[in-house]
Length: 304
Image 1: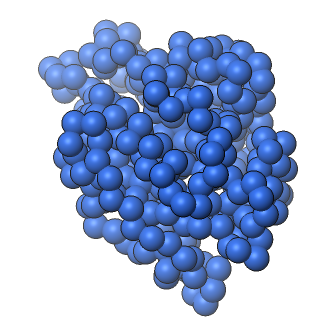
Image 2: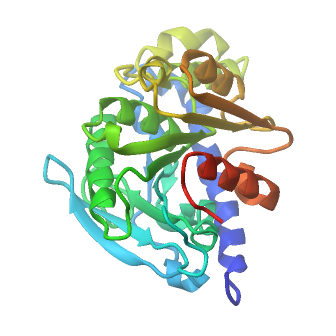
């Protein structure tokens, strides 16, 4: 990080908190409307405007344009590892962000990794940032496969050194997308933070949080499609190593979702429940960053 790079990240963290919480309030207070239509759209809060670019934080990067299998044009950023920190074999992390904003907002989750010798490829789902189209779960799964293919095609990416890292909605998506991906055998590991175990399950949790909507949790949850269930898919990923991370102070996605996913996964697997950490904020501390780097080394990545 250089200059005033920390300032944009402080602003983005505040913005992200609002944008993560806003859908929760919509589920709670607009619940009667949900019965009239499918709820899938409640999971997506895209923004087209990019709030910053990596060079403003002192990071080298390149724009990557690619297309999903249905022709939707997508956009991402590739952040190469700092040559001073990188050693062979260099890992590339394919990063899947949460439900709101775009990659410029979520850059704050992974900016520190290139300085530790890790390549980062982060991309926007359809309808987010500079990616075309409108978001839906079927489309996001197509976007994942296209992004994974694009990451594998980058000159800096060594064969067999891709690790998928998803946060919140991106974590839930990562589980089911990896399970269905034609490229899953090219992955070194899967990391998910603050993910939920199912779309219906998280809607029920939010409806149950208020006495006004508590009676509606079961009937209204069935307006949400459940074709993609992380709780079922995660058990199909072995022998891929899986790391499940969750803050115990997460008020958005309860930590019992992480426990359920861990219980459903097969070995090799690990569960980190971090005391005091709120939603998708585990890796804001150097201690947890160092712990993740140690984990990546265990996967055969020469992170610093």
